[in-house]
Amino acid sequence: MAVVEIETAGAVRTVRLNRPEKRNALNGEMLKLLSDAFAVSPPPSERVTVIRANGPVFCAGLDLATHDDIQTDPIEGTLRAIETYPQPVVAVVQGDAIAGGNELALHCDLVVAGANARFGMSLAQIGLSPSWFLIKKLLEVAGPVMTRKILLLGDPMPAQIFFDLGIISHVAHPEDLEEAAQGVIDRLAANAPLSLKAMKAVIVREMAFRDPIAHADVDALVLAANRSADAREGMAARLAKRPAQFTGK
Image 1 (cartoon, rainbow, N blue to C red):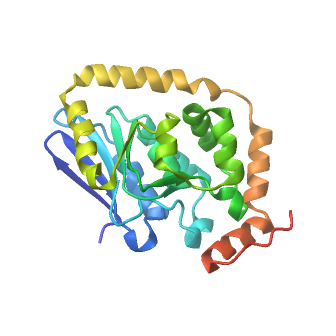
Image 2: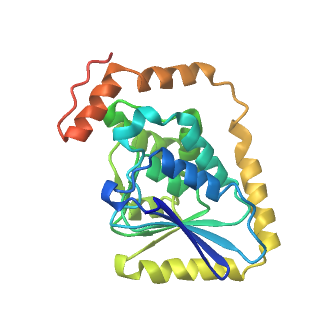
């Protein structure tokens, strides 16, 4: 069984996470398949790519059980490939999008979410820190105040709040999610493809203004947090479904 399924119907290509028994938590194989899916140039017949997920959860983030085998670079590379893909990319979020799942959705051009979905970055609750690249995306879409709230508290928020704040583009009643998503997809597929390609390229280029900022010292802080005893304790506690006991070491 493929952990990432890809199918094309007319002008629409669908990339589907298929690890529902693990809440579609991302492991190395999934990240590789996702990267490969966005490393190819789309044929002229394709106009829109859609990211979906099987099961009740969109994506619970990186798989903590295999976290030590996943480096920061692979997930960043995957998200960058999605963000810079020439076509519009739409995320259809039917359930929770947490941590890496939150970033996966937000690196798409448009997000159509069910009102029962939740978004968030729970890494502070397990002793980890997102990288410069991942926090940059939150600042772009959420602004500094909401980015602080999302990161420092770590609590998931309802899709409606993300919509009201302009972090995601569409929210729909769960029973209407497919109809709402299809409406967005159809609209994109009907628009002029060269216009969409040009517009997306301009947006991606203009939003890259933070990339040249020196941040080696910040990277060192992130690495120290992610390699700390607290991080090991936090991940173990989350897997065991018990409260974490952090010591600041």
